[in-house]
Image 1 (spheres, each protein chain N blue to C red):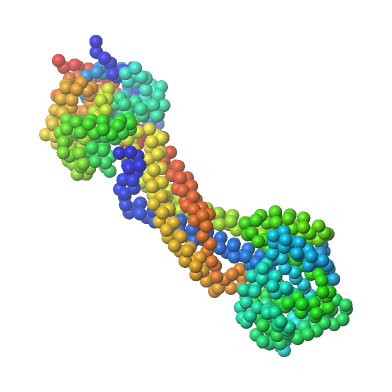
Image 2: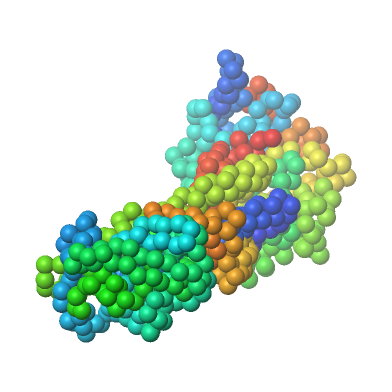
Length: 408
Length: 230
């Protein structure tokens, strides 16, 4: 009988204790797989909300536009520049912005008008798929606008209601016009939710008398999502060759970027704390298992079992239990994660309207299963189990045989 | 000329119990020769088990030397001592001390497995040894399915299956009835006479003393007498 067989028999010698230990490890492993995959899903969803709903991968502005969004600070040859970037293998859309006062029958509020190219915008963002009520903007609808969820509440308007805009044109006159609410967006980001009014860029150009050429912002999206973002930014910068500011979303939103980067670390910390609790269960079980057999280990030593072989035996017992727990945990964790990947975990009662650094967090959390989220918890479990049995294994291995034989 | 298996030179073992020093073994010098069937006799606490433990490398002497064949045990590391026990010494304990999750066959084969003996040789030697100790047909029984006498036979089989230089038996008949004790002694005597296995007992059982060819009296940790029966 080799040590693995002996270890296996020792495990089932006290089947209740072994089952409780295995069940605790399996449950923790399953929970951490679910937690990791949910975190990955939330991180991916947050990144999607940042990039695909608004910011895009890369933006181009006049150098001082972001600090002082003046309607005169336009990228004049935006058409040609956009075409050049498109030829370099990117999706491109132009945007115009203006500010003013939007009024309904009931109320008024300061707003940011967002003029977008209806065709090209859908290649750089998914905002057209994020309509809560009504429809997205349509070509030929000369007075239709889509507004943020909070703005609709603020102005007390619903679909089809009329809005009056008052602002200033580029040539210094007063701009005013009336619009109809065609759609109300789901939560995206604080600024979009509470102050944004989307319309076609032709409408906005006409409303505030902007020149026929030029844009305040060029938004760029990688065609290959696996392409390195910094590399893509460098490529775009090389194409621009003008005194314009080219920044990717991580540079534009450093707080969110850092949050998403550290979310992985947060998952690891969570794993660590959970497994420290599991390790105490494993340690307790192994201490009981080892210390009640010290006399037996003494006999084995008398027969010629070396300290290293004692350590191997204790570790074999732990690893067999960990393997069984990992398989059980993996099956349970993957099943639950797969369910949450398909149907999501509705956290709306707790997290509806929750934002971080201005970015809305989706109240329905979808898990995202990956090799990382599935196997990192298992790796952690093995590491913690290995650490937990160091003490009992070393203690019994270093005992003098006579001391172990006489141990009560 | 008799071949010396064990030689003890001025061996002492002192246990510290609080502020008290207990001299369990006190300046003992002794040789055990190949083929001996010797008994360390004396009352409880006389130091006979301590001498056995020191010879077997289960405990470390306070002073003096234990030589097994031509090896001084104090010079060995823990792993080297384990090698010596595995290859040169067989132990039989008072309370059998079989591994409860193993069958009689597996208990007897365990040390051979540790020695890396191939399965076929293991099987031949274990089956033969179990037959020698009268356990043919009980190979698949676990300790809790056997009587005390049967368990002690398995322990003897485990001790002799590797052809050790010496078998150290600590009160081997203490936990069995007199009929079983006689049967076990018959067995060990037969193994000594037919296979030349060296036995050293620690005992105060008259059955064992009556059978021993050499009686070593131990009192207060010292050798009080050493008689060889012809």
